[in-house]
Length: 252
Image (cartoon, rainbow, N blue to C red; front, top):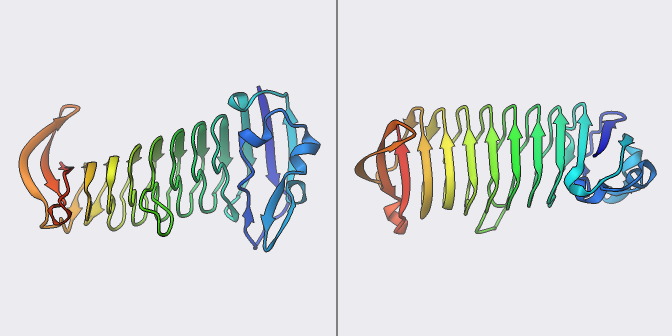
């Protein structure tokens, strides 16, 4: 097992683009080699060691590498981008695009996350033990397909556009969500245990389950009786008929 601990030397106002910070790039490397890994800061690149104190225990493959962030990294973007294995633990808040394009492994965030958490994720798991901002599991600007696989669990609330253009995978939100969850969905599953507003607009396929209150249910959904999921009876709607959709919307 290899454990790499990173602690920010001082708060940064300019965001650090840490797209190289993942177990795939850290596996088997020494402290000096990890400190030398370049990250974007402003319009140029700097060594990771300019911003973080780094300690390394052991040496192993990506599957057996764990990265631990100590403290607030709310101005550090793209942590875990494209990772395929291993684990990242963030003990504090994190900036945008955490887990972008993730293919495998696990990210645990013991704080809040900014927008685009798990953006275009393809595999692996993200557990957020706090609140999320906009576009959880969505596609980035202009993309027709967001999250394609894997699982995101948010143990708090989220803001608008959860799962926008989602094509696969699973999102579970334990709290409330903002406007337009599951907008333009093309697959996958979203479970919302709290409240939602105007869900599943322009959804073509996929499943959305809402256990709390629903505001502004679109008239372009057709009610088709009930469906039982894990012992709970839900009202079943299909649509969005405006786009010829065959998605399933279950409301408690």
